[in-house]
Structures are given as structure tokens and as C-alpha cells.
Length: 364
Image (cartoon, rainbow, N blue to C red):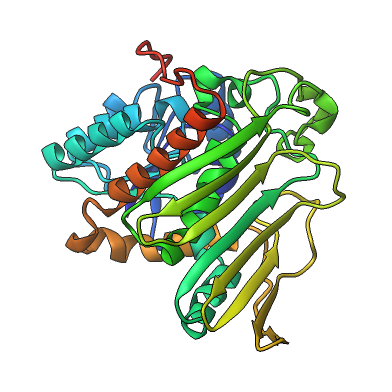
């Protein structure tokens, strides 16, 4: 499969390009980024194995030459770039967040229909071995009643002072970033019809202090800067149309020692709890644990502790089959619309003001 990587920031360089290049199912034929220095740096790093094309704009890509575009641009450009590619018939694998508003979800749906190409969305949390073990265990829990889900980092404000902490460019803070992963992870438990109720609170106790930055995202920790107008923590309570309730917390930084992700699923016939660490932070628990509780008895369930980032490789393993399945058309957009609608509800509850992304767009 001939692939173009669109966006050569941290996710494009560190997550997708290395895995695509080592995967037998893919041939990277183009790199796209408006930054000439970024393109030149990666071309040089490929040691003579440069892709066919180095472009500053995705409009240079042609359907006859590209089978898939992996889009990893800054958040405010996700739906904008993806829609342009879909409209000309190029299938897109889009990093989360897929969109920053329900209106953007509608634009993506129209583009998918107009160009006849499929949109697939990044869903790392569902491709982890431990979360899949939790999904398998859910069959023993009876009717699902409630899910507690959290992802709390010790020190992990991403690119503090950069686009990640500017609402106009990122769409939001920890809720849009970590919260999207959490809502995606709980989707199999709550159903596909979305949330009918959502309330939440947000806070920004750490985002203005560079000491709480995600130094592991930088070659030089000194690159981490302070500042921004987004939240570093969100706490929310949501009720799905199915009746399942969800308590959610997402924090870029906290006073705990290690980054931790916890998913606790309560059912009519038992409870299951997964403790692990999502993402790439080195401040993590060394192993995942999964526990099934029934009638007062806790039972440990075997779960694989896999290399960091294995879930991204697993997504690439399954992408070709998903692209070949016509039944997948429209599913990514429908799920994204449900997720962003929930996020909009939480923001409206926490800070009732307009969070719309400006119409003007930057490069790309």
C-alpha cells in the first residue's frame, strides 16, 4: 500500500513514519509538511531511501499515486486536511482528535461521500492487548451499568507554550487530547448512540509552569515552555443513551509519582478493573493488571504486557482489511461525531463560552 505521511511533527515523525517504514504492507512514497527544514531533515535521515515525493501541501498528492494518507497535522487542521484529501478520492487514516466540532464531523461525512474514499480514525486505546482483554472479560459482567475511566499523568503537559496549549489551534486541552482516547476506550461499553447528558469541570493548575511539561516529547527538555489557555485537567460525568453512566478524569499533570490509566467497569454480574498506562511516557507502571470481582472475590486475569507503542503497529496490521471492508464507510465519522458532541457538552457545562475554531487556517 503506497502511503503519504501528512504532517511531520512529533506524531508523524515518532509514531507513524518509523512503523510504516518497517511494515511489509506499506511503502512510504511521500512526506508532506509546509516546513522545508522538517522535510529535508527526514529525507536526510532516510539515508538515500527518500520517498518519491517531498511536498509542502497535500494538494500535491494524486489518487493514482497514493493508496492512503496518514494525517498527523496539528489538531485544528485535522478535518480541514482530511476533507481535502477525501474529496479527491484519497483514503485517509486520521490521528485523533478526528474533528473539533460536530460541524467539522459533518464536513468529513460530506467529503467521504463526495470523493468515494474511506476515512479511518486513530484508535490506539482499543488496539492495546490489555484493553482487548478487558473487552473480552466484559461478557462475564452482565448488564453494564457504569464505567470509571481516568488517565492521569504525573508530569506531561505536551509542548507547553506551543500549539498544543493554545485553544485556537488544539481545540482544547486534556479533554480533547487524553479525553478523546478515554471516550474511545469506553465506547464498546456504552453503545454507539452517544451521550444524552454531560457535565464537567476543568482546571489549569499546571499548564503555566514549564516544570510540569512532557520532557519526554522533546530531545531537549529546555524546549518545554510555560503558558497556554487550555485546561490541564477535566473531570466529567456523562450518561449514554443506553443508560450507562461514565465518570471521566483526564489530567496532563498531577501530584502523583507515575502516569496511570484506570478503567473500571461495573456490571450486574461483576466488576472488572484494568490498571495500566496509556501513551509513551516513561513515568509509567511497569505492567498492566486486570482484575475480575464477583461475589466479594477478586480474581486476577492474565494480560499481556507488551512493548510501548505496540498498539500503533497493531492498527497498521489491521488497516488494509478495514479499508477493504465497505461496511466501515461512515463509521469513523459517526463515532467521531458522538465523541466530539460529548466533549462539546462538557466544555459548555464547565465554561459556557464559544469554543469554535476560527475560520482562518494556517499552513496546509
